[in-house]
Length: 306
Image 1: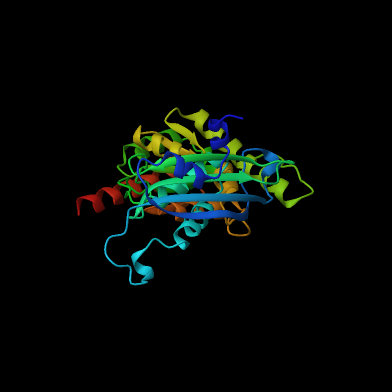
Image 2: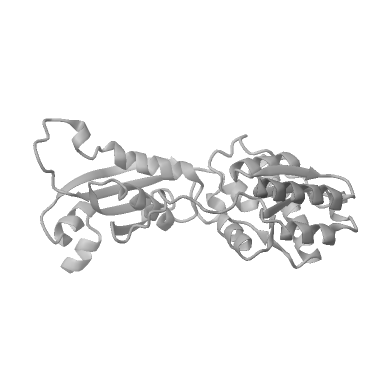
């Protein structure tokens, strides 16, 4: 085995020592194992697996006496906390995404110069499957510190009666002209929903019934675009589309999913509104939706002019 291959499979500490341009101080976390739900495959959903973290951080040299003062150094806790915070933020499909986010968070520390992050799945077979990345201050995007400049959206829940309204097209035009971006949520389609033997399977089925109606609404009017992720939501807002939320991915990827996310479509829409810090939430249940939305748009206009 060549030295290059040996180094590729070596511990991140060995890689740091072999590739550092100049001698430096280091902080390391070795064999930190956490049980978490992660993975892109369906068999990896609704269960946890062991994930092992090995992290090495190259540090700025300390200047002046330490005086045995913990506040003058980068604590080991900063590494385990970076892992815990990113695992708690949302359910992820890819180890690559998790590694990037952990590295970015660690590099927010003023002492950190370069970080090696190796993450391995331990329960996917009789082997370890993993990814390792190396990032420095120049490569790290300030994603955790950047403040969003997006306008808070308005979340509107549409009943099936509202979807059937003859005023729907006129109402959508008024919503689109409003400076506050609109996100529409719908109830389940008027179809017979199958019954599953497990709660997890039923959750998927119920969410799919809502998503069917989201696609029905999008097909009724080209101004509407079905969105499944926060990224899609940002894009539709910037391109002056009206977003129609398909809840499956965001709900199933939510970390605290055990009873924290409602199942009923109306309550689910309210929950989503809270997650987005929406400017307001309104449920439209009757046929005369045009009057309701015209009032909302005029109220928004008045508030912006005030």
